[in-house]
Image (cartoon, rainbow, N blue to C red; front, side, top):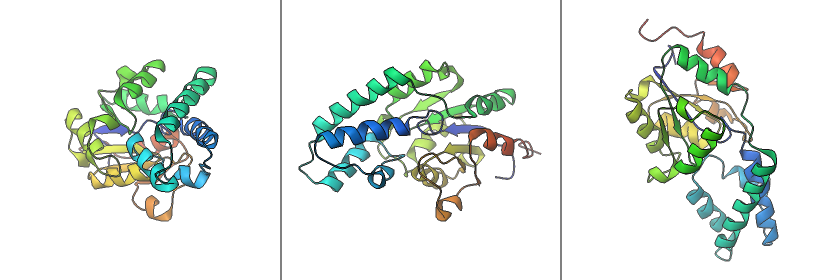
Length: 224
């Protein structure tokens, strides 16, 4: 990216909200209760894709005997119990990124694999929902990341061409989706480290959103 973007698109889990560790704990415990070992290696393949795609991958991994309905119910119960007890913290730099956009009148949207109602609820709990012009969740699209549909839907609502949008992502699938959409992407890895191949697709790889904002501020303004 050679100039500041005209619109920002954010992933949510692992990027704005520190949820991936909570998913990992609750899903691994639910699988273990059923006699299956959801290892770190397996979990890493589930990051950044829709719940439906996660469930398909679990069945592919563990076989048709995997009791998906029981796993789904138990994992959700465990997840909600952790959230109730501990909350979901924001990742560093979230407010810095949103404030940067607000000062420049740059519209922001969410493109997440999480269901839309759940995403909106999580953002509302952090008093951030009104800072996004649109939230596109995994239930609104027919093809999840790494397909570009999610981000293209967000850009359409924001009324900016893909080339003028910058995506913030933590997951490999999100980086690939952004590039397939014709957008620039800043990668802020969470649990899944950047590989050389994925890093090459990004405009930059940053330790936090704050570092990404610092980089953005060094770029010339759009149209100059």
